[in-house]
Length: 461
Image (cartoon, rainbow, N blue to C red; front, side, top):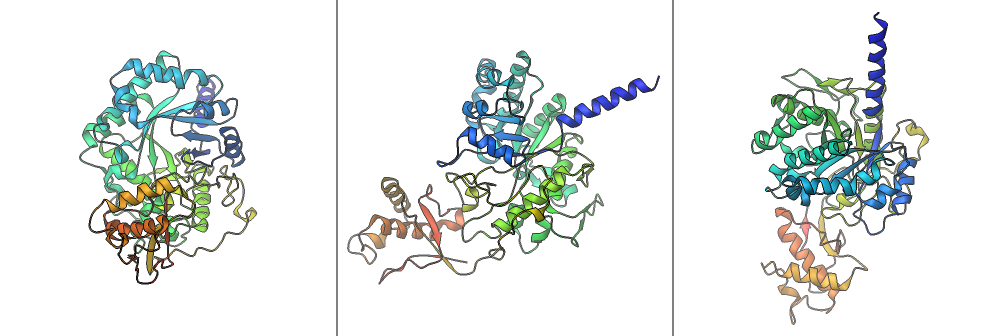
């Protein structure tokens, strides 16, 4: 008599573990003008041992390339249409009918995110509409018999106002009641996941003196931290960050919502003033996080021992059109030509000893010296001229020395004028968040571009 319930228990367990397995996937971003085709990209994703892939829209060429492939797929409603969908079931239906229904039978669409880090990077008027839009998308999926697709949204760590110690994890007061609580209610009711973007790299960079690099890379064998309230012991920064979200959810009355790592990774390069962004650290972190996440039996975290944590590594490619500091363009596992930046197997089955030796890191300590921001070689002159005009329009006498008759006017070259303007602008505004990027038209250099009586402004670190 007792065998029948036991049989169904194991049947349920096998189905659940198959759907919510510890297999690791990859984020397929498209912010590059030199990336392989979707068809080639899918082959490369499979060659990395990935079992899942997330895209940041519902690109039909990519979804067609994924047809018949054994890859679970996560698609996304773009941030900019959340407001409209939140107030229109008709629009939600149209989006699902256009971007999900035609592909579902042959493409393994299993997850649908409504927005990407909306709280971190989108106008505040969108924030309250995340969950209403999720509800309408979920209703539309159910109408079309696609209610097995889990609906969620992705959140970065900056939605917390406190994350240390982990037991003190608390959502920001401006969003906890009005946005996060309804989100958790929805996830709980629909048995979905909290999709979390977690980057120990950024936490370490903010405080490299007090956070040990090996602790951030899963490499420390001696450093441990015991949470004074929970008495849980931590051996790496990743677990601390994830558990701070676990405790934050618990504080709002939702202790059991599963976490999905929507993004994690480490940059393989960056600007001169960005420490720790190198191939050695990137390979070390990503290999170690894959080992942790694919371990059998599952390891979980100190707050959730033994829990499966589905995950996606960021990112498939180095994407040359991502704005911001240099690290933003160097999170890839692959170069745009499809070759590996370093060896990695997302299945976790290949020992590190089977990979080629890694180059030793040379920027784990802060750079000390001067840096200039100059125009990149070979860029579009029309775009460069526009960027020059922008830099010079910001006031503060940024471009006075390159005016006719002034000491930096000659040589009368767009390249040199732009280089001076970029350096002058960056040296003045870096402390308020300015970067040496200018839509990909600028680059940092440690070589002084000054000539004759013309001295270029610089940043001193």
